[in-house]
Length: 554
Image 1 (cartoon, rainbow, N blue to C red):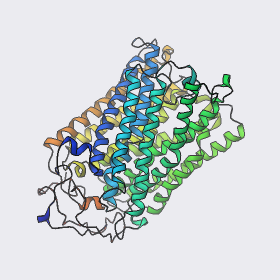
Image 2: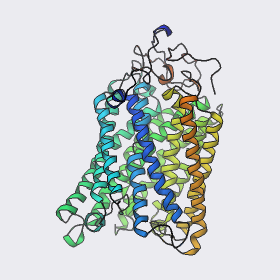
Image 3: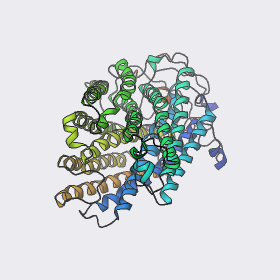
Image 4: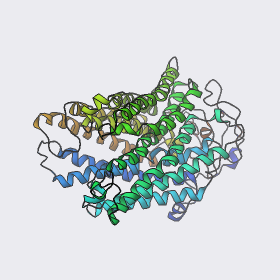
């Protein structure tokens, strides 16, 4: 892709990991790479908490009468699962971790445009997370992660305000990160790195940042309105006070449907990198894929009404929202078509990151196709608020978002840590996660189709076998995540030293050492090639923080 003007091996700098190692140096760092690691550790903790909540209420659903938990506890657990996973894992995951680490390196910059603002965004995120955890510790919240009014604003007796404040504050963290990325991409690209030489991961992060900046203030205002009604009794959403509960749904979903693309667009950017690298080809239809990210970001703001087909919305409004929801599938289909065309006649290999890319393609496609049933007025009335929606949502968010995150984490793990993970265990875990995921959520399509409502604590005995299958699948899925965590931690201490470019990939991030030096590049790289130039040799004379053993490609 490029020729970086780098120093000789004799001038090898310390890596960002080994250059000063104290708690203070980490907590006050303005290095985008260290901030990414801080986010990675924080998000892992939140993921474990959200996963533990899901495991407990899944066990509760093993029996029709739900013998393990009281209904109030069950409500609080699925609310905790939703709040933690949405606001404190899925939304920030790829931008905060992979985006923070990679955006400056991929464009040849030393850091983001506003390093101190970047550190502040992590502290703001942690403040929001601690407030939400405070709500859980003090007794929990039972409103569901959507905080539907007037229940959340007037009637719930749980710690709604703490949880709302946590989500509100975390939103500012996302806005700071998005603002940083937009300015960084506009102003700090290396010489020669034109817009149409940018990696598609950068295009995805740019489109995501636009959605965050335009959409997040809306949900922030909505959460403030809950606070005002709950504390001061203003009739904003409560019909008894002259308010309109449907107004809350409009405002909430105006942000929360684009938020789906905040979680998915970064994942699509990761998959573009993986498919190109492990097919050894330039991504087919580069320009179409780049602009499809922007198209998804724009059209995503016009589809919120499909969440409200049964909310007394007019039939004509429903028809328009239904059409627009189908329309947003077009740029998504363009991406999938171009990924497949890239693999067609490509020299495809099956390293672990590519297995996650395949997992993304399969699961996200199922999630997208089942979304068509929910975008159609007639079928949505039958399926609304059933387990079909739960299954669809998880196929998109977990099958798409988490698979992309794990694929990206494995792809750039050698670059981030300077260590390789055991490929055999990694492939095994990827397969276990894929199987466990399908065992967990595919039965839920059947549950929803046959009429099982979501959020119910007890259910008819005829649904038990499907719930047992789903819980068994969740156990397999959890085992897959634990295996992955085990070999990742092991690799930090025992893994082989990673070379600068273990995958023979193209891109500026592969032309610096693994792990990178503090300033990423000793001198400014100069880009002379288009992205994904797999028909041309990569630059190999890069300085490294560690000696590169021979024959190190796994």
